[in-house]
Amino acid sequence: METKFASAERSSEESVKSSNSSLEKIPYLNDIFCSLSYIFCILDENRQIVFTNDILLKTLSIDNVDQILGKRFGGAINCRFSTEEIGGCGTSEHCRFCGAVNAVLESKKTGLKTTTECRIRRIIDGVENFMDVEVTATPFLHENLNYTIFSLVDITDRKRRAIIEKIFFHDVLNVAAGLQGFFEIFDSLEEHEKNRFIKIGASLSQQIIDEIVTQRIITQAENHELEVNIQPIKSLSFIQQIADDLQFLEVSKGKNIVVSKDSVDVSFKSDPVLLRRVLNNMVKNALEASTSGQTVTIAVNKINQKLKFSVHNAKFIPRNIEIQVFMRSFSTKGSQRGIGTYSMKILGEQQLGGTIDFTTSEAEGTTFFIEL
Image 1 (cartoon, one colour):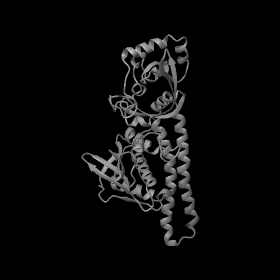
Image 2 (cartoon, rainbow, N blue to C red):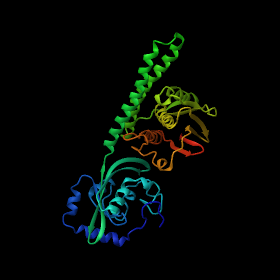
Image 3 (spheres, one colour):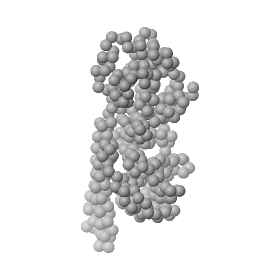
Image 4 (cartoon, helix red, strand yellow):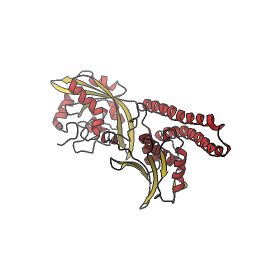
């Protein structure tokens, strides 16, 4: 069986049942596992579940362990990438960057306990759900057969708090620094220049408010407490206002933000606050990827009965980064970053009912878009 990463070979049903029966005979093993407050399971040589505690069953809302025996962990928890290849969990291109399968492979290779963090994208009732977890894999020899004790601790809340605090302080301080610089030079301006700078100051103040509101919105969305407020919007003036507001960001210095001349001007209905958050993040990411003198282009086009809002920059995203872009906590900008593209997904798709994606190539650069 073909694979793009880990072995696709699977144990037979008889082998899985035999392992389970043998492990259940170990004195107190089930009592010990079930006394733990986090997921514990034992995997066989082919990374299939042959023993588990009740926490995993409760997490998956199932009653009988037979429902997951023989499954690989990604398949059991409905990882969105576990069905990409016929070999299942561990065999897709995305699995190369999965902390869970890499922890298991590393522990098997070294014979040592391996702990790492993992970002998981699950599909639950047709909706994508994101988890940050800490996984530990430990080799275990029983009756001359090699197993792996695999544990998983949900650190989603801890990572969420750390990321939001980091981003909040980073982004708000950046805008506040720009506002401070504005006041430092305001008195030295000629009278005819002051009206323009007052608009700049107002824009910077609004950005500080927007950053605070953004963090609140994301938290409400993750907690399923966010109310969507649908209103009429004019497409062209909407993206033009975004371009005008973001040109005063620190990251915009020396770069151009333009609205495509091919953009359409139509009336549509959506939540302007949430849509603005999505497009703001697209533009900010594009600006961070751009160098001095380069241009970020915002566009809106009508395709059949959908509106496609897009943001383009000249930077190409390498494949190893491309397939991790929408993972919460993943970032190329350092630790405790990485909520911008994730927030596009959670706001644009789960709240606005749109489709978020991007294209990238060395020849054409990168375009993020939302279709509504």
